[in-house]
Length: 330
Ligand code: AHM
Ligand code: MG
Image 1 (cartoon, rainbow, N blue to C red):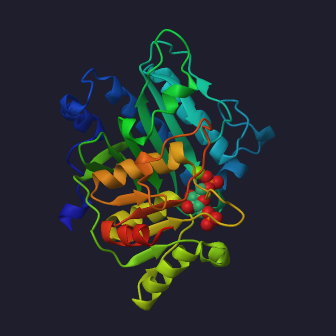
Image 2 (image 1 turned 60 degrees about the vertical axis):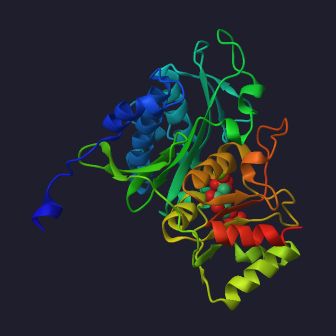
């Protein structure tokens, strides 16, 4: 018990990033700065998420908070926080966000990176105190520095990501990311305001016991998906579905399992977005020894179309389960 009461002594995200700088593809420190900016915005969003139920009360005076800013919905606020942090950090030239139709130019025309982000995913869970998350993907820009970023900077394909990760605002808050050298997890220590290294070298079990999907869509799923799910049930696998992608993904990453968001009649391309949901989580899962497919094709090999908000069917998780699904795919 003495141990459990002691303050965590260990590696902060900051220190970890410094140590690992040499591993990054461009050991300039710019990518490190980007990760710091994302972590900083994540801390601020975490604070807002934690007190979400109170913000209407504390923001009652003309709907203004202490900074004189109008009270925003949490997903809009998260978007503002990430854009601000990435703008101030200076390394990010432009942002593609689920919250904005067009690319957001930060004004850092010399910045060598662009970031695709879903600032607060799990919209149906935001107002009901259930885990939600942030998902991000980082690319080195291909357009000439000195001018604004272009769509092509975001449309390089999943294998061009230089880093990807998520923040889970759950019963504890975690930042999990990869720069292409395995997957590392950090847990937020509120009283110290720091992320601490808690999960080095995360690997997903090759087999798993969990399937996660919205079974309300069953009648609209493709036949091969229903067939696969039926075999899961025949084997008495466990069904678990939060309805927040980051939460469902995170659980399965540790326990083993498969997450499914297939095409449906109403959503023929599926629901999830390629650039800031599927690509980053696919990079992470491959780094953790798992698999992500859209059916037959690996998610990271799906060529992006010109549509920055493109959707794809998404199946991700333990290698054996996803391969089984993939083999059944039409
Ligand atoms: P959002 O980007 O509008 O929040 O939608 C994405 C979310 C995912 O977090 C989650 O896995 C999925 O939508 C749940 O969808 P459904 O309610 O159709 O099951
Ligand atoms: Mg989303």
